[in-house]
Image (tube, rainbow, N blue to C red):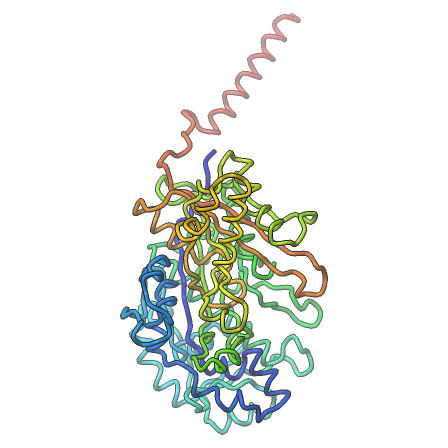
Length: 513
């Protein structure tokens, strides 16, 4: 079977402390209940600088300057300065962007003139844009800008503010006077998702020398909903992202399944490529404003920085087998069925052991598992524990129960086949796909042969079903053996068949004569 391949990937983080304060769900709900809440008063004192965000070890793993396994050798807490990784904002897979540059990108991707920026801010940011390796090529036009008084007037008319260091530098207008689906907050959320996804796609292209004109299709898989009162989740983010990223020959559509959406999207993309419908499919997602500062109250209670201050984004290109890039084993797909059940054991069995059994593999045949890769420094203070480690222990326990490994091997399996969590808690972003880039890098270096990417989702959040959700797939080092080409073309085969049919007809006619 000629499997599709992971041709390249791009990963970005955007440091957005001001969007966190104004738009994150924990902050907005707290402010609505009590504008003088102590948490809101303390928040500024616990926000990180851009330099601190760049030097934070999990962030360096996310953009590819270190491998996730290297986090094991770095002292914790990672947020302490003595444990910082001294690498820059650009990595092998992508970059970490500051908020001011991101405001300019939001303005650029806005095609309905809903984003307004101050004249002073535009003058300050334009020289930075001219130095950015990707933004300088995008021909970003910010216009002349607005006076601060004009921005303040827009805030009085339900616009969402854009601040830098408590200074008003812009705003996002509502797109309709009465449609809640087009209010300013929703427009901000959607533009942020769009802009960070565009940045991810551009980094995918830049880091892997990819011509985006070769992209046939884009599958977008964030957790946002784009639409109006008559079709509030209609989409299409994918087409909007493709337009701004420069995928001139691409069509696209959106995939939604809460946190599991990226894994679903990769499987769909692999099927589209393997079927021959498209040659090159990009799976992409931007970040979620709502989840910024989601566990901020718990972090401040523990006297630690509010670590959920970054948006996440990623883009993965799935293409025809090139004989070199890691293949997606479309014959090893785990799926959580309607009748599977929602117990942890049932979920892991359906996603991990069932597809392995169907292919005569055991748990140890997979070198690395990428599960819900949330950074434990974010989740443990909030009482959620170390999410990746819990998943690895469940996989190992199933292995012991099945006889794939001995009880004494349980913790060594967790260490060898797992990795520390390193992704921001952005819902869909941590769910398996952050390891696609590192896995490809490790396969190229001969460090691993197979990795399983596991996406899981909580469908009950939508109040439509109590069902859980999940899908998994295996990526494998390319053996270099591509499908053998036919010695004759498809057209020649058709001509041969037609010729044979004509010969048969002539013979039959000769016999009747």
